[in-house]
Every structure is written in C-alpha cells, then in structure tokens.
Amino acid sequence: MKVFFVFAALLCLATNVVSAGECEVCVKVMDEVRASMSKEDSKKKPEIEAAIGKYCANKGNKLSSREKKICYYIDPIKRDVAQPFSLGMPSLKVCERINKSNPEICSVKLPVKTENMEKQDISKLRVKQLKQILADRGVECVGCVEKEEFVKRVQETEHLAEDEF
Ligand SMILES: *[C@@H]1O[C@H](CO)[C@@H](O)[C@H](O)[C@H]1NC(C)=O
Image 1 (cartoon, rainbow, N blue to C red):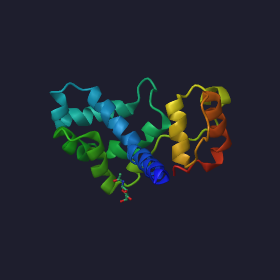
Image 2: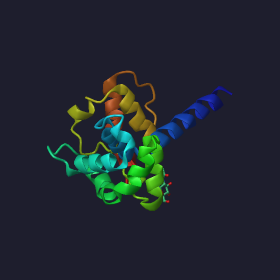
Image 3: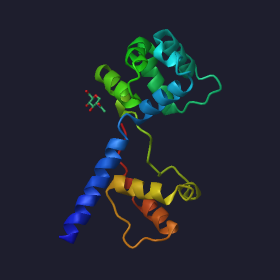
C-alpha cells in the first residue's frame, strides 16, 4: 500500500514537471513583453504590437537563442498575438492559442541537458533543480542527502535527458 502511494506521488510529480514545461519559453516572452508595458497600454493592440517588435528587435542583445526562436515565430504574427493579449488572457492561454497555427511555438523548451555543463556549473544549481532534472529523466537518487551526491547522479544520467526537438 505504501509503495503504491509513493508510486502515485512520483507519477504526480512527473506529470507536473511535464506540464510546467508547456510552452515555457513562449510564456516567458509574453510575460516579459507584458512587464515592459503599462497596464493601460497592455490593452491596446497597436501598443502591444509595438512592444513585441521592440522586444524582438533585441537591442542590447539580451535574448537567448530560445527567445529569439519564439520571436522568429511571433514577430510576423504580432496582430494575432495582440488580439488575445489585449483581452488580458493569461500568457499560457495566449501561447496555446497561437500554437494552434504555429505548433512549433510550444515545443520551444528550456534545456535541462547538462552534458555540456562543467561540473562546477551543475553544482551551482539548487538541490530542488537537480531533483527536478532527475525526475524529468525518470531516475531516482537513492539515499542521496548531500548536494554532491545529486550532482554526481545528474552527471551519471546525462544520456537519459530527452531531446527537446
Ligand atoms: C501545440 O500544437 C501541437 C500541434 O497541434 C500539439 O501537438 C501540441 O500539443 C500543442 N501544445 C500545446 C501546449 O497546446
């Protein structure tokens, strides 16, 4: 019985990890565009289109390759984005809607791959993040207590990281 509950809890955790990643880069971009605007302007379609254009122009070179990829998709369809955006629809809903006509939008995900990371950089992650990476790979870290042990397990299981694309 106890085993069943542990299993159910793990399954639940795994499902959460998956859904948390849904459209995540698109959501981040929408949130950042929204944050760059006044509340008043975020209801006006032309202002929204301008804000997306400004964000995607990437002055100052702050965007990651993943954010640029989202821009590659949304910049040409600013008008379709601005419509639901102007109604105050949550970012995830906006992304799901535009994903219908551009299914690549929600497939852009943040990487959890660690194979190109130095050990010292993996060590900088929080234990919570290390646990999430392991859960994502479907592995456990039996008896692990020290952060060092989680780091080691993450390194051992790099081959289990799923391809993002
Ligand atoms: C995005 O669209 C694709 C193709 O229609 C679909 O398989 C996927 O589930 C969609 N993603 C979301 C989060 O709606």
